[in-house]
Image 1: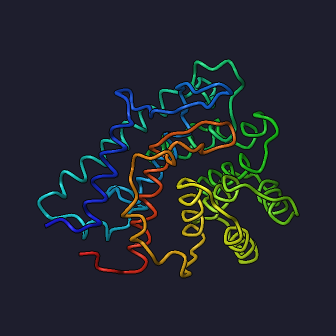
Image 2 (image 1 turned 90 degrees about the vertical axis):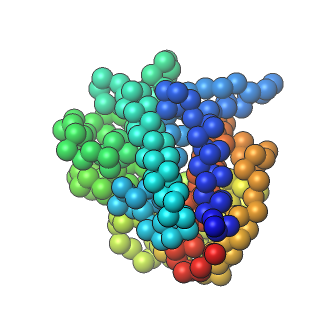
Image 3 (image 1 turned 180 degrees about the vertical axis):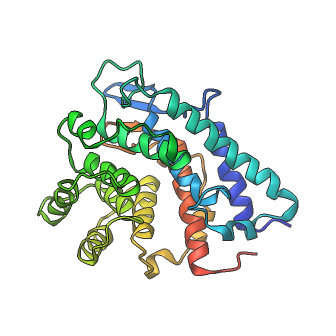
Length: 293
């Protein structure tokens, strides 16, 4: 018999599958002043692939207790679904890469200049899947050539630098200074910095500051709540706010909230919200060690 959490896992995976095109691309919607239109957005694929790493048995980030929630007879199917989703996402991400190693926010057909945050996220996903295949072009000069960057892009770069060991000594102080500043940070910026700190720089002061900012931040939709929860988990926060896993299990996967934008460019993808909620639920369940049978 499948546990409530096991049913939630399969329901979430089926929803993410329904949002993935044959090419591996995810359905994304660009909000416009007088409506909306679908668009390509490789960075959405990187977010979903990263979220699914927490339930992928072939990933080093996997929360292995997820296997306990899946009946033995369905574990092979579960592993195949997750592996298939992540493989197609990786193939799509790689297909959107430019010849110089960069990525555009709106895909290769975009006429805009390469996007620093998208490049950092996409390069990170490729490096995590095949570290030996990342070209040497991703040195410090490559990142500096992409131009100036805001806190959001700098945090995504910091994550790549922390994983690969590339020398960009000016990057971490720049991120820390932005966190220390009096400017109010968005949930997107806070989550990006928290994700960079996952397995990255060790600084209790920065961690405590991030936790404080996150706890004081009000969320207005399911995506923002999922981003906030994900950031707190990345910072190893274990307060009461993370104890109630059941709230996630009752969420309807098809709702207006899933179409909230996941960045400051007005692009939304239901798969991003669903994958984040799924990853958060599994991480919290593994942290609290509740049976969920």
